[in-house]
Every structure is written in C-alpha cells, then in structure tokens.
Image (cartoon, rainbow, N blue to C red; front, top):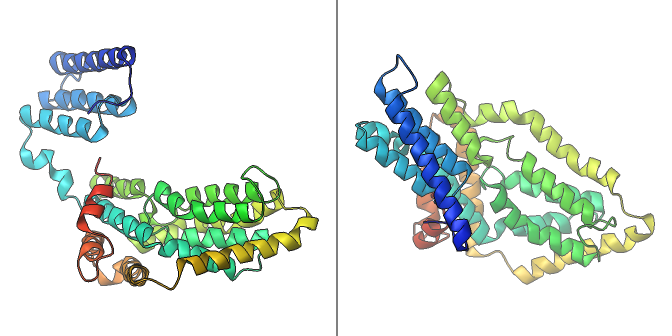
Length: 329
C-alpha cells in the first residue's frame, strides 16, 4: 500500500507527513471552521482536505486514499447511496470502457500496422512521414483514451524510422523533427475529441452535475475542431524548424519507405485480432458520432465495447488481461 523502494528515513518522513495531514483533518472536523453550515459540511471539508493532499503528495496508493475517504464518509453518517453514487455515474463506465478499448487496440497491433502502412504509402520525405505519424495518432485518439497508451503504440514506429535513416532523436537530420512532432501531436490530440483523455470525461461529469449541461460526443468535436486544425499544422511547422539537409533527402526518403515496407512484411498478413479491432473501431466511432441522433448513451457504448473486447468468439483479449491492465485507481 505504501510506496516501494523507500529507505527508513524516507519512510519516517512520509509517515510523519501523513500523521500531520491526518491531525489537521481531524482538527477541521472538530473545530468546524465553516460557521453557519451543518456539521456534515465541515466533515466533508476535512475529508476533502485529507484526500486531496494525499493525492498531491502520494504516500498511499491513490485508489486506497479514495476508498479511505469514502469509508470515513460512511462512518460519519453520510448515506451509502450518496457515498458510492459515483460508481453509478455514466462517466465512470465510459472511462472504464475506454480503457478496455485502449487495451484491445494496443494488444491487437492494428494501430501500429496502420502507422507503418501510411508511412509506406507516403513519398518517404520527412514531411510526409510527419503527416503519417500525425494522422495515425489522430485517427486512433478517440478510442485510445490515454497519452501514455498512444505513446506506447506509436513510439516503436517513430523510433524505428529514425534508426532506419541513421538519426537519433536529438539529431537535426530528422530524428528531432519526428519525435518532437509525435510528442506535440500526442498531447494536442487529447483535446479535440471527448474520448481522447479521461479528464475530458471528468470535465463532462462536472458540466452535468453542476451546470446540468450535457455535451454530446459530436458537439465536443464541433467545439474542439480548431484544435484539430492545429494538429494538422504541426507537421508543417516542425518540418520548417528541423528540415533535413538537401544532400540527405534522397537516401532518407528511400530508407523511410523501405523501413515501413519491411516492418509490414515482418508483421505478416492481417491477423484475426486486427480485423476484429478494425470492426470494433468502426462500430464504436459510428456510435460516438451518431449519439446526437440515436440518443444511445455513451455509457451503453462503453459497456458494449467492454463486452465485445472480451466476449468469445469476438474477444480480442481475455477478461484477465483486460481487468489487469485497467488503471482502476
């Protein structure tokens, strides 16, 4: 439960910090600084303080901190239905469903194959490579709801290409351009679509609970379209900043295309898992886009995705793999 790899001194400091935070939280609950409000409001402030500080300076695993906060709330008399109401929230299930999708697309290798395919069909220039890397990340961002997961899928593609042209990530011959563009694209792609990042869904939950405003997937896309335009400009800007020497262009272009072609050959023909992942991608994107017209809730789409990802004979991963890899905290 406590962080691993700490020596005795570090452990003592962290336990002292935990004790101090706990004492302050107890004092808030006892002294009730919010005069004129019910006691439960002060108790809520005390729990909020303890949980948030422990999330900011993690000593105990974040999900354990969260459950301790919920348990204390129950002990203080807050109704069970209120304390655990978050788990009945649609957004919770959308986040979990999106993790299942990310796991399926990562394990099936379909996103990586599409990346190699786009590079192999390009002219081989650094600019065309940057465009290929940009748009394959963009295409899959609605169903891979994590910067880390998308990075894990596409880094092998960019790293392999830079090695093929004899360029390290910090080398101005192309490696710097490729990795910088990949980083920018990965970050910018978290904003233009609702399901590209879990915090977008948490923001939506806030809009619904506080302002009673529900933003559909398509409406978010409409509002985020300027960000998508920005994503499209990244390859051109980075290429101008780090354009390779003209003397390297011919050999570089050939090496890039050949690397992508060779990588596709190594992957072999389209596997059953990749075909299923493609079918799942089309289905989920269609349901996301049409949610304004079909009135099918995002949580239904997410639960459907969870079932299809693990359910034989369609299943792409086993239930054990899916449950293990979801970041439940």
